[in-house]
Image 1 (cartoon, rainbow, N blue to C red):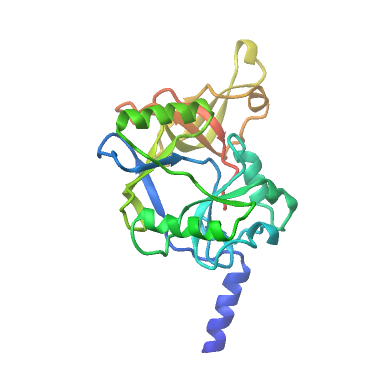
Image 2 (cartoon, rainbow, N blue to C red; image 1 turned 180 degrees about the vertical axis):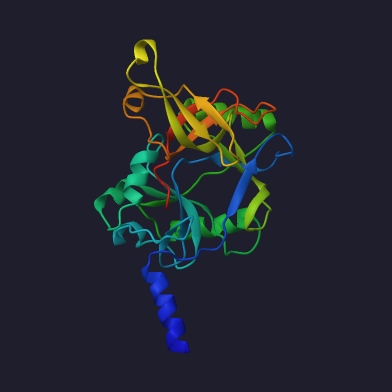
Length: 276
C-alpha cells in the first residue's frame, strides 16, 4: 500500500502540478470600511508566486522553473509574492515564467514579497519575518513590497492617482492586524479607479474608416453568458493581429448597466498566463 501511495505521489509531482494552500485574495474596495491606519502598497502587475520553502509555484500550484541563482537566497519557510519585471511588462514576464526550463530571462525579474502565509499573528508581524530574513540574507532577486500607513480616504486617493500616473495598476490595502485566511477577504482590498475583468472572444467585427481591413471591435462573452462589444484600447498591432476566437482577454470598465453589460469597456491585453 505504501508503495502504491508513493507511486501516485510521484506521478502527480512529476506532472508539474503541486497543490499549494488556497491563497488569501483581495476584494474590491468601494468605501465600505474605514481604512484609516491600514497599510497600502502598489498592486504589482505580474505573476503570483508561492515559495513553499523549496520550490517556486504558480497560483494554481504548477511548479515554475527559475534558475538556481534566482531562488538560492530564499528562506526555508513559505512566502507569497508577485513575480514582477516592472510596470508594463506583464506579457514579457509571462513569457519568461511559462518556459519549461531554467533560463537567464528570470534574472530580469524580481520576487516581490507581500506575505508570509504560515507565520502567526497579524500582517505586520508576518511581513516583518520576511524583512528580517532579507536584512540578514540580501538577495538581488527578492524584495519586500513597501507599505505606507493610510491616513484617510483622501490620502488613499492621492496615492492611487500617483501610482496610476506612473502607469501602475492600482493599490492593495491591508488590515495590519488581520490573520492570514484562505479565500476572498475584506481584510485585504484592491483599489483602482476602474474595474477589470476577463472575457472570452467569440467574434471579430470589421473596422471602418482608418480601421478598414482590420479589427474594429471584439465581440466577447462573460462567464455568465453576457455578450458585448469592445471597440477601444487596441494598439495598431492588435487591430492588425487580433486575439483569436476562444482567447481570454482582460478589459477594464466603469461599472455595469442593469442588464449586466459593462460600461465603457476597453481592451487591456490578451491573457497569456492561462494555465499557470
